[in-house]
Amino acid sequence: MIIKIDDIEAPTNVICLSEARTRFQIDKCRHVHLAVDEDLAEVECTDCGAKLNAIAVLARLAREESRFEQRRVAMVAEREKLEAKSRTKCQHCGQMTHVRPGR
Image (cartoon, rainbow, N blue to C red; front, side):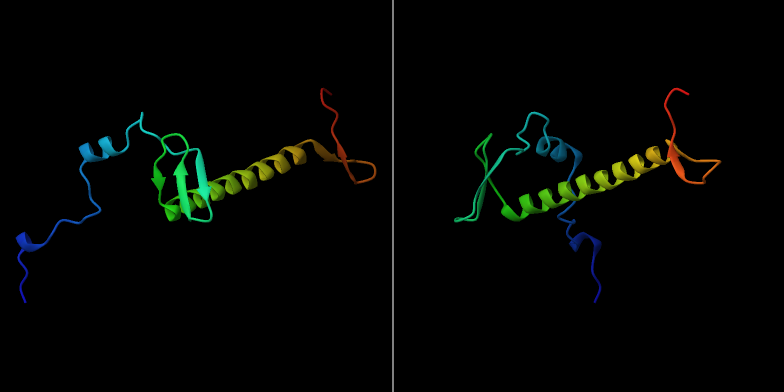
């Protein structure tokens, strides 16, 4: 079977730049404040009143939580590096001791 190039439809996930600019406007609501109705399984933006897809909101919250966890782990590692720099090995007893600041 031979398929002509003209017969192939354009991918549906590709959009032009002008469409992207109108879709993601700066002054448009970002849906930061949400109200969740667990009984009706609905999510609503308390700023603009839009009904939101619960799965999309859940996925966004999971990504944000993952990003916060990655930042927390990185900050703990940086703090451990800093604490390691503030201690040194004693020449007399061989144990780790804190370095006095300013000396």
